[in-house]
Length: 310
Image (cartoon, rainbow, N blue to C red; front, side, top):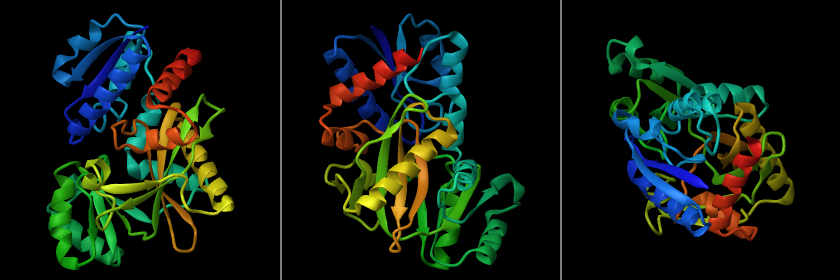
């Protein structure tokens, strides 16, 4: 088929997307497809509008890629694409609204509040409100951002001001939530709607204090244990939660669902990634390899599922 791959973009995750795009393009070419790569920019939409392809594979992360906007454009011009549609993408990107949906679905969440920057005259006013409603430690992060960009684990009150500024640089809504300590795990989900399956759970052991940007994308930044070292009962429970979260948001074809497993063995959901990284150090390919799928085979499965969906 003729397949266009969108990668790069303008978000804070651009460098990650460049690597994702490279991997996807190489896999598609090895699988025999005719591939057009586009380093996406919202000021060059004519590159999208002029496309004459059978399918678009979105390798973008963050704003203008993972938030439903590019999906809306592709829907309007009638180009099929791999992955979730507009609504599911937008909901997954909006962490505050996604958490409300997870709660309704019976999936454990961390308690949180969303703060709109324009509703406060200064960040100092927001800081006062946060100090009245949260106890240390807690997390401050942008409501719509990925790869832990703009995230701070606040362990001292003196950190709050800088943490708010850091988050506000990425988004006009700031999410503050209880800090949940425990084991970080993630679950890839794949399949057509109503027929999704969870792949092996990945346990993540960051080399630093927590799973930050460097831990995710720098070689040796974290260790991935597949399958995760949890009981069979917990494995089934976490995988079920992952599929339910995917379905609750209306995701399609594939996603990756992140959890913290508390010391009491409660899986607390963090977020659903509708366009998870596909770099050499990414998690989804690690899990897929555990059940015998090569990277190229995994990418082809995404394509096949999408064309089956048409």
